[in-house]
Length: 219
Picture 1 (cartoon, rainbow, N blue to C red):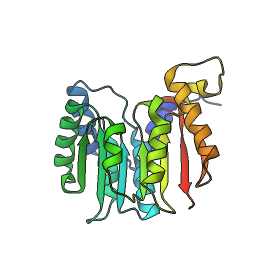
Picture 2: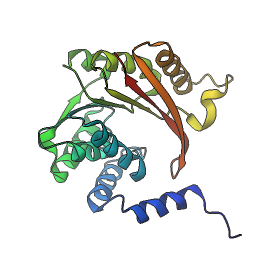
Picture 3: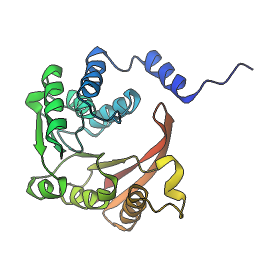
Picture 4: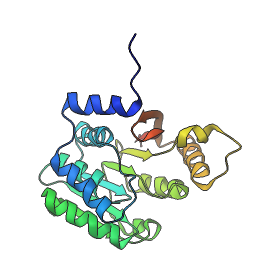
């Protein structure tokens, strides 16, 4: 038996074989790095998953909490129909500036509304319903973001909460760091919310061991 490939090599295999990613998305990531943004955007495979979710759900309106450099927003906006709309919330004005340049280069700026400010402050001013919500921002606030997402949803809306596994720490009761505590609290909130049905999936790849919650509004 040959030497087992590591997770990054497996990611590269699937990206190459499935033809995932393109020069425009590569430039989006490079623009974010050049702008000094943290290198924490979704991977190409994860981005393709988000694009598929947009298409599978037939989403026309998408809400993203946490714009960062615009990578995930770009892949979702490209998957939307021509009259679709993405509202993306970003607390950092510099991040928002970088993302706007990425959206413009990708030709999706006309579909995207970048809202700058604390999501806790901007979410109450949004008008729903949204068909898909992607939450990838400060982890301690995830419970508040999911509550707001449900209020801005309709029956059938899909909600994705990223980075909840935290390298397995979510299941370690001795880890009381804010990000891990937020992951537990949002999981418990979703479990107790009768309007949601949900599952959690672990992921391993170039970004390490993590995972996400996937929920659907049932009423």
